[in-house]
View 1 (cartoon, rainbow, N blue to C red):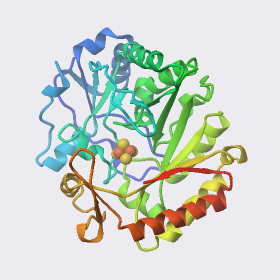
View 2: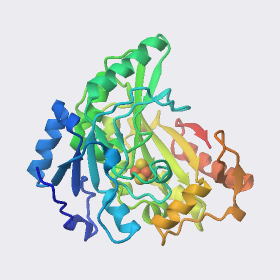
View 3: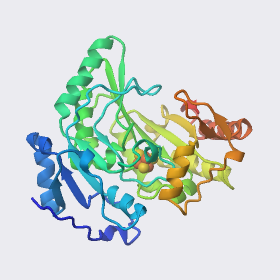
View 4: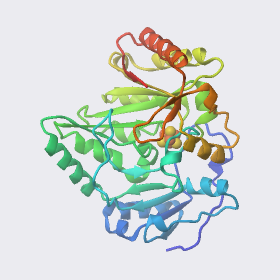
Length: 360
Ligand code: SF4
């Protein structure tokens, strides 16, 4: 196995692609135990076929230094690094209110959304980790399902990553969707900003997986979501998901106040309604989340995206106390209400039978 790190440029970075390409890491680390699993072996073969440099590491915790002269360069390289490992903690975190549990199939994300909460939660470990012990993870999920039966147990697969962005490498999402199809008392959901849905379209899902696309006004996508699929790609993918019979929903987040936001969100919803097939529209659901940040997040964002236009001015925000001590800055009530009222009205205009699950 190679022990050198090849950080040659990936020429997909040099031009604006018409279609957002699938993620190809620049460097892959394997934890040795991962290679004892068929999925670990499968990923190794893919890495070799792609000609990607790879190394063994005894634990992802030992990956301390990424190449680069500045912290920013190191961060960018870390975001293009994949670690293939075994999920040891099989106690799932809670994921209220959208689900009972977060099901761990990967951690970290290839996207560069300036506002992403993973900036803070993953801190110094922004690389992408994928887990290969899917049977063990599923066995743990089954125990949770059995414990709660006949109550439904809902699992969220995107609490710590965007699982669709790495699906071509792991197949973990397809695996979960297929297994969930056989579970009367369980549901899966995931959220994505990517469009690479092809592997999911022919799966048997029995409508037990809820697919949510994260969408936003053009301004927000353009300025704050580098590295994700374009809006049109996401919508096209949503239409395919609807045609494949999956329950479909949209998360509009973060809802962001900027000059011209009314036009931006109106156009978003109008385009969405025009692009979706009729059968997808009648029962579509929306989750609305206004922009928020913590002080810690702000300092991380300022370091990692120093030229970001993301406005985080405490004097223009309302402080909302958090359950675990650290509070968040949200919009003052008057602004939040304007955002909520306007966007809700537009949703009901373009999707008269649509449902708004919450605004927060
Ligand atoms: Fe974060 Fe989602 Fe953007 Fe990835 S795509 S960086 S998980 S907000």
